[in-house]
Length: 581
Image 1 (cartoon, rainbow, N blue to C red):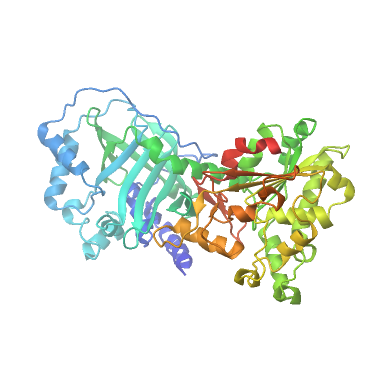
Image 2: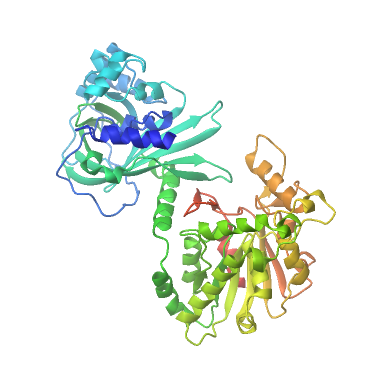
């Protein structure tokens, strides 16, 4: 219902002329807070849309000069900068005081370098003295907004709230990015950022013309990560209504204070954030990089082109990648594949779609499911077909069809691949598989006669695999199990990572107070022989620190999975296990 309202609201306001950023004023608390940075900008009609998304690199000015500000102005701006929130609900005396401070700022030199991070301290609209900065419930605030003479009344509601802790603008030669930091629920249980990304299209002396391209929320999540959720406004469909400009009218280099005006006349007071931009934008950069990877994915033609030259490298085996549950979607393993190719390995991913994964639900209506007696070949034929297809693509690129390969599996992909080796792969294909590597795979079935064995999540699939192909079953294949002990499971309401780990570990092995990668406990991630002093030469184990189970949040029904921005997972310690490939 919220999405329906957003669409209806956007459609209505997009028909109103000269309201470039009015579309941002969605009546959602966090969404509307972004207007602190954009509400006054109006469209500019003679600007072309860019064809690419630029990087978010930031440069800063290092030249220093003596301030020319008088003591009163400097005191006013210093006092203003002490506030943690952007000031928009101004009294009459504040409007006069801040306008006087803006007039006292020295005029900027031509083509001032403003590429840096800028903390937004205050906004002053043309109608500030007439009351458009009054309370959210004041009728005059809404009247000014509807007439186009003032910003959204939601600004006053948001900036007067403890939910928003910072509004910052990051400028680079090609970017015009706006970042709102916020927290929700008592105690700030939910924290994150709203990122509105714009491309700079033109610079006219100190006037920067920009076009909003997209936006997203970054919410703090488990394992030191953030999840990215799209901002529900289709900027690219708005044409020139998504274009605006900002003109610098005053700047004091020594103190770092800067004043600018938007096309609707609203004035902005900023403070330069030198030395802060790169660190504060690190998660935004990671989210942008993931967006580019997941949006493009890798076509079959690109995969073939990337791999063909590597297949003639007889010192490096090809890698067949078997994804985690609900994995194998565009962008999931792109970074890992690129890293492996840099090391000389051709990489072929077993590609799986949301529709493929949903087909597993058919098993829930069978007697075998309720008896806990599912068989991989019957319950997971789509996964076996995906592995076969990856082998076929490799053989098509390598015409003699004799290329040796390694199976690299992640999470449940490990025991699915073991089943594939046992009952699907032909003898000639299996003979070419020289190594098997699993990352965080729950190989061990729940202990028999335990409560969790009766609630077996795999409904008998894992027991089926272990009963028929236990440990390092094929002596000509070297099995290596890679695990992590980063998270100790514990029931602790103050620690989400530990509580999540406890629940997952308990469901897998009947004991939640053990170490693991946050999902799979070490005890479950090792094959039988690899856990027993490595007595069998073809079964080995590598146990890591500092990495979690995965860097994506699986989405059962989505075309793409959600990236855990900033999360360290097994691929981030590739140097510790790549040699076994």
